[in-house]
Amino acid sequence: MLQFFRLHRRRYARYGELEDVEAILSSGVDANHQDAHGNTALHLSCANGHADVIRALIKAGASHLPNGAGNRPLQWAVQNKHDACVKLLMELYPESSQMNVLDTNGFGKSALSDAFKTGDAEMVKMVLNHKSAEEDILLQQSSLSKDKSKMKKEGISSKPVNSKKGDAGHEEDDGGSGDGPSITHELGFGIGEGEAVTSSSGSAGGDNDDDDEDDEETRRRRRGVRFLLRELAIRNPDECFGDDAREDTTGLNLWAAAVVLARWVASPAIVSRLDGKTVLELGAGCGAGGISAAVHGSPASMLITDLNAETMANLGHNIELNRHRYPAGTEVRAVKLDWGDESTWEEAKPPVDVVLAADVVYQASETSPLLHAILSLLKPGGSFFHVAPVSERDGLEGFLARLCGTAGGEGAAAGGGGDSGFELVSATDAPPEFCQNPLLSGSQDEYMVHFNELPSSTFRLHEFRKRA
Image 1 (cartoon, rainbow, N blue to C red):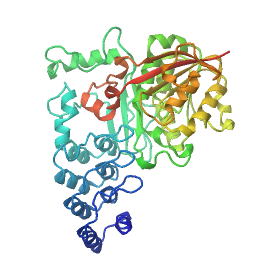
Image 2 (image 1 turned 90 degrees about the vertical axis):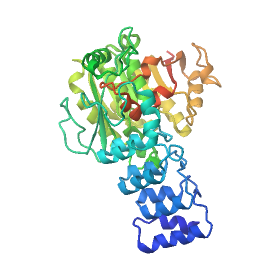
Image 3 (image 1 turned 30 degrees about the horizontal axis):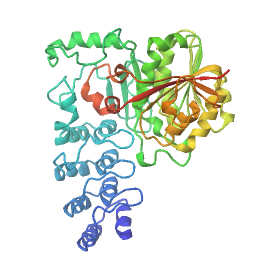
Image 4 (image 1 turned 60 degrees about the vertical axis):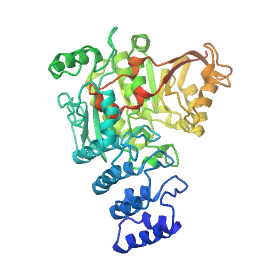
C-alpha cells in the first residue's frame, strides 16, 4: 500500500506509472484504502492531475469518499484546476448517488462553491452540468429560475475574478490584489422593518422575470447599505489551520457565522449601543462583522483584528473597499493581534467597550488564550457579543461553559458567570431573518452556492458582560 501511495504523490504522471497502478490494483489491493488523514488514492490522483490513473481507480471500484476534513476527490481536482480530471469524474460518476457536487466539507464548502472561486467559467459550467446540481438544492430552493444555468446577470453580487490590481477605494472594485482566485460579494446586512429579506415574497408569479426590476429595487432598499467583501480561495484546505495561529488561513473565507454577526450588529437593538463606543472584533477574517458595526453603529473606533498575513492583507483590502461608507468620526483599522501574545495587543489600545467574535472557536487548545484576551481587552462592564453555529466545534462547548461559569454553558441562565469574570446577559438562537440571503442580487442559486450553511444551521447569539 505504501508503494501505491508514493506512486500517487508524484507530481507528474509518466507512462510506466499507469501500468504500475494497474498491476497493483490487479493484485487485489483495495482501491478505497484511506491513509491516516482519510485520503484515498483517488484524492491524490485528483490533486496531481493523473487522469489516466483516475480512470483506472474508478474502473477498479474506487468510490468518491470524503477524507478526514470532509473534502472529496472532486474538490481537490477543482481546487487545483485540473479540468481534464473534473471532466472525467463527471463522466464516470454521472449519478447523484455516486457523486454530489453540493456535498460540503467540514468548513461548509462544496465542489460547486470551489469552482466559482477558481474564476474559471468552463469549470463552473462543468460542475453545474452534473446531475446532482440539476436535482438537488439549487432547483429545490430557488424560486427565481427554472434553469440553473441561467443565473441572473444584472446586479451580479458574487463575482469570480482572477487576481489583479484594482482600485481598492472604488465602489466597483472587482477583487483587488491577491495571490489566488477570489470572489467579491455585493452584500446587504440591514433587516427591513417588518419585512423578510428574501428574494421570493411567496406571492403569485414569484418566478416571473417581468417583475424583477421592481422586486430588485425593493430588495435593495430593504437590505440597506451596500457592502463589498472579498474572500480568497484557501490553497490547502486540509492544512488550513497550520502548525500555529499565524499559519491559520481559515479567515480567507467568508463564513456564515460572520454574516449572522454582521446582521446582529446592524439590528436596531445593537446599533444604538455601539454609537460612540470603542469596538474590537477578534478573528475577523474577511471583516464582515466589524465593517457592518462601523457603518451601522457609528462607533468612535472599530478595530478589526486577525493574525495570518494573507488574512490581514485581505482584511485591509475589504476595509478600504468600504472606506467611503464609514460615518464621519469613526476610525476603522485592521490590527494584527495574537490572542496568545500580549505584546501584540498594544496597537488595539485596550481596554475597549465592546468585543465581537464569530465562529472563532474550532480548536480546544485556543480557548484559554482567547478567554484571557477577551478578559484583558474589555473594560469592566463592557460587552462581548459572540456568534457560533450550534455544532460540535472542538472546544466550543467548553469555551461557553467557562464564560458562563457552568459545566454546561449552553444551559446557563442569564446572570450566571461564576468566577469567569463575566456574566451571561442573553443566549438566543438567531432569528430567521439573520440567516436569509444577504446577496443584493437576490439570487438564491448563488446564495446556496456561497452561504449554504446559513439556511441549514442554527446559530446561537451570546452576550456576556465583564464584571466590574
